[in-house]
Length: 169
Image (tube, rainbow, N blue to C red; front, side, top):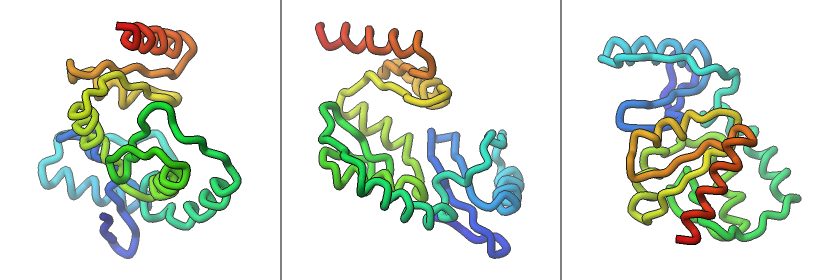
């Protein structure tokens, strides 16, 4: 899922929607890939504010370090469904969750497929846990999904209040 431009790696980092694709890898190769995409008709090209080639083959060696760390971490079976974003399926064992986390570092995030999968399973409340709300904003366009960012305490409390309300209905 990556190509080499002048011996430098560009990976398909994430497919967020039918019209939003993220590439990652060597900075100069990503720049060249973006120019090529523009020539082929891409309407918008944005540079993400990150210095890490996330979800690219460049990070494959780091996944070995993560594996060593995860080997000493206890991951309990989840009480709510956990979707593996590499394979787009539910994981319910410690080993499978750890394996997916390791592969996630260098593999494509299949976000659009995950959203389609969730809608099929009729799980419509989603929480984005992290410092921003990019994925929450992507999901707000879909009226069938209730999406919350938990990027601050206020949003965190609103999200869990909504989940409890849905749970009790």
